[in-house]
Each structure stands twice: as structure tokens, then as C-alpha cells.
Image (cartoon, rainbow, N blue to C red; front, side, top):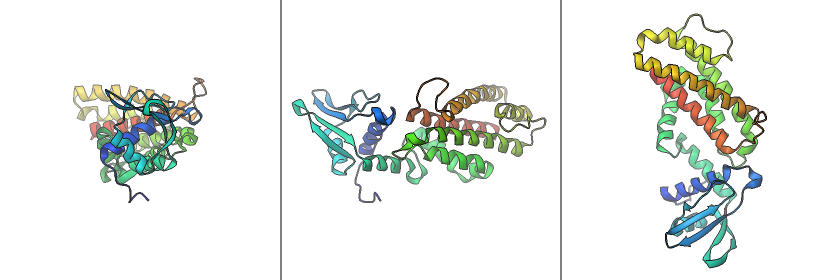
Length: 256
């Protein structure tokens, strides 16, 4: 679908920044960007989100325009241009995020590579399957329709991860309630404490407390932020999916 797109990595990075600036707010509040040229450089401002002076060199900007990923919607004063990300641009953003199963950023790449590896998938097949399902809902252009579904699937992924850990290490006296993931993780860590150093045990204990905070975010995501009275944004879904990956990554590596 995008075999004919000729972009450098820095062009793609700019597109990612523009799309994520818009996706940080509900779809109905998104606005076009303004491309301005100043003595300090070229910038994109606006978008309706938290976009503050995204560095937007004119050559990068034109490269995205030429590929149909951006579209000029109006000409402003002093040579400025109002532009928007096209539907093709959103689709290409999704392509970038799922290309070869690797996210764009280096830290995400390391964690995603680990989760995508055969070892993790063999140990936690159901948790991995659920996590991938939630993560992939972030990238389509209409991802805001899937925000609560992301939370629901992330909760299932967390429960499967805890269950597969329990089965893997055969921890005794485990809470039989599958939803009691914090208690189940604590039982596994206690069972493995003889093989853990003092510092690593303390780290895992703290990580389990963080796990509970993450589950609170997952619950908020699943219920659409109704309790807080605040609408969900794309950033909320990204945080849930990414942090769940981080915690599963760290727990597995520490216990292994």
C-alpha cells in the first residue's frame, strides 16, 4: 500500500509528531496546523492539541505534502500556510507504528522486540495476544472509537499475564480470583524470593504497587473516564498499552 512512499526517517518522525499532537485531543476539537517560517526556523503550530512549535523544516514539510500525507487548506499572512494531516497521512502513521512489529522510538523498540520474541510469547501466549490486540487499536485513524475497548482488552491481558505467571512458577496459596492480579503477583514474588537478591526483591515489590496504579488507569480507560468526568484521549490509550508492556517486561526479566 505504501511501497511508493519515499521518505527519510526524519520526515516520518515529523509526521508522527503532527499526528500525535492532533490525537491528543478528541476528534471534534482537532484543528489544522499553521506552518510558519521565522528567523529561528520553520515551525508547525496549532492542531487543536498540545502542539507548541513543532520544528517543521520546509523541506520536510514539502516532502510530506508531495506524498499526499499533508494537505494545504488555506494560505495565511506573511507566507504562512494552514495545513492538515490527510486520511492517507493517518493511515501511513498507522503503517509506521506497526511496520515489522516495531514502534518508532528506541525504548519502545526494545520492549516491543522483547514481547514479540518467541520466548515471551511461549511463556505468556494469552497475555501477549491480548496486549497486541489492545495496542493495535491505537493506530487506526478512528482509534477514538476504540478507547474503552482498549481498556477492556488491557484488563484481560493483565489477568492472563498474572495467571500465566502463577502457572509457570507454581506458586502456592494463590488467590483463586483471576481478577485479583496484585495478590497473585505478590504470591509469585514471595514464592521466588529465595532466588532474588534484596535489591531485586524490593524492586519487584515496588513494581507490584505500580501495577496496581496501572490497573486503576486500565479501569478508567475501560469505563471511559466516567468516574472522573474527564473524556479519554488517545494519550490515555497509549499510556495504558505502553505501561502494561513495560511492567510485563520488567516482571518477567526480574523473575527470570
